[in-house]
Amino acid sequence: MGGGGREHALAWRLASSPSVAAVRVLPGNAGTDGVRVPGSKTLIENVAGDPQSVAKSWGADLVVIGPEAPLCDGLVDKLSEAGILAYGPSAAAAQLEASKSFMKDFAQRHGIKTAPYRVLTDVDELEARVREFELPPVVKADGLCAGKGVVVSKTHDEAIAEAADMVSGARFGDAGRKVVLEQRIGGAEASIHAICDGQRAVILPAAQDHKRIGEGDTGPNTGGMGTYAPAPLVDAAMFAHVREKIVQPVIDGMLKDGIPFRGTLFAGLMIPEGEEPYLLEINVRFGDPETQVMMPLIEGDFAELLVGSARGDLAGVDVSVKDVHALCVVLASAGYPASSSKGDVIGGFGADSTQAVVFHAGTRRDGERVVTNGGRVLGVTGMGASLRVAADNAYRAVSGIEFDGVQYRRDIGYRALK
Ligand code: GLY
Image (cartoon, rainbow, N blue to C red):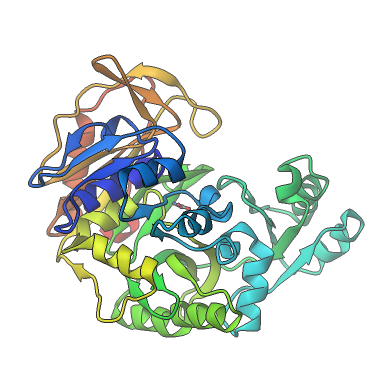
């Protein structure tokens, strides 16, 4: 379920899972509309309707939910009540993403390393609390804000103004009336995705993303302009540390609190030089565009992993990872991230091959043509034996694609490629 690049990548990977006979995407996009993955017999089709009745009428064996909003609204609970197996957390477990203060209190209570913080709802207290932090704190709206709820300010005054805007309801409505002030932690960011069954986790290769619109990581934040995996920052020792000190304690803590966590635990980490990582954020779904670089690295029956998680039984199930690198370049429409342009004709998709895959996000069919339909339009993932080769394959495929106002970064992966 979903219509972005993440869902195209999930559908693409599921279609080549041996146990999968059919993949249907609701509502999907132009990339998930009547396509076959090379080497797979499974057709991916878009459908319309409401998830419960559509899943029931197909006799769907598994519903995989992409975005956070339906998870936080309890779609997995509703599907489960209707006897349909669904991949993802319950609404109660999805609070780890739906409420930043829930996540911070949870981490603190269970001894998981996270940055010092304060939770506030009172405008009159804001100034004093912000000034308690030596450096201007990061201001986070408590609720879901479509990736726009985290603000990093240069001065205390700016942080106070940002927080006041949120707490008054002016910025994000009810989602911002409670804020988390969090001590700013420097370092390198990485993210880990774990597929959880309530007790156990299968951890996928680490990915790194570029959130800013501009080259050199400058300019406004976006949903993500590119990613690469595996992330060299997360070596074997770091991977083991994250499993032992972050992922498993989150799963154990949720179980102890009576809210077993099933589905994707997407842990946002900050790793200061020479220090152990901090858990700064949890999302309860796959990252976008992280999924577009993780899916090409996974082999074997990916669907079995998701079914194992949804059934609460991943015992004996593991992920098989290919020895390849993947790098995704996001192509955005004119005006993104402030706005987006719709209806521009897209040409030059010829690159789909073993070296690069074009994942659609904001696209739709208009007769015979494919046109832009949102901010992030395409994610072009190159694969290769090294990150350099993956980058070259991605950018070769990107160079053939055209639409009015296309914007993309030419430096995805620059730190790792240095
Ligand atoms: N790329 C960041 C996210 O999906 O939240």
